[in-house]
Length: 362
Image 1: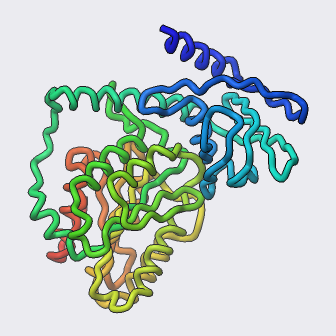
Image 2 (image 1 turned 90 degrees about the horizontal axis):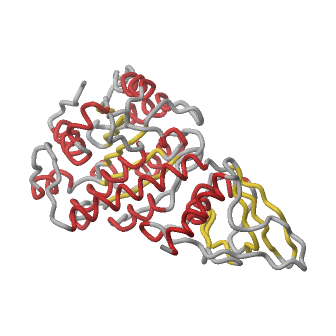
Image 3 (image 1 turned 135 degrees about the vertical axis):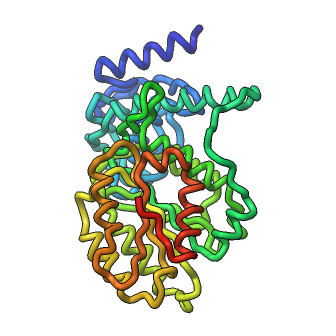
């Protein structure tokens, strides 16, 4: 009962436009501290707000310290630094205000956030926990997808270095458009990528699994384990614009620098919901890459559209048109087909068709 009353109080304060603590920065004032309420999955309300801003604290019982600031996030643009001491916090629908202490000086920092995305993530965490509890209780889960033989799957993928590029731009907060039980595009990717990582035996893949979350900037996690994939999604709230060019160029360039790269095939899977609105020309990058390859099986780039996204469909139709190049290295699957297949089957079919020289054109 006490927890329910505390939770109601926190939610009420959010809706009223403030969270827990005053923003005053007088050095003589002792901030009023309210304990962080623990929600499903041990995620506190303040933790979710910090997640939206792109930062992590060592403790959500203030004062505490900033332990991480993710590149390309509102916190980085607001000049929050790792090691800053957080004295107080106040949140509204569109802004997280923090009083921080750095080198014995106190500053007020205003960080733009999207509380709508935070509340949506809270709801999805609750839904995911309900599903987890049902599975733990042994209740059947309806799944009409055909079974995939794990040994055959691993044999097919074993020669490849697998890179999963996941769009974490703001539009990935949007729904899939699949009816009453809709979830966000980002949450669907979370479920499918976690399942894929758990299904794989990374020791049997030539280069393991690399995960590259991207928006206006990108990060790279090599040799990602299922726990690493889970952690990436646990610490990310989609925000910002879409720049596919920069991470794709990095992944391709890194591959081409490897000795004997012709014999180390690379599979790049791009999960995105729309047209890039930042960065260079993706089609030019793909065309230039294709023309320097001796064989098109060296690099496979698969674009998977996430959700009911006409712009995403337009993107993959164009990139999968051949671009007038010598080697066609692009494959694509629209979301209606991807939803039926699932990520594992989509990746498996992509590699099988590439091995036989017959790309999937849908």
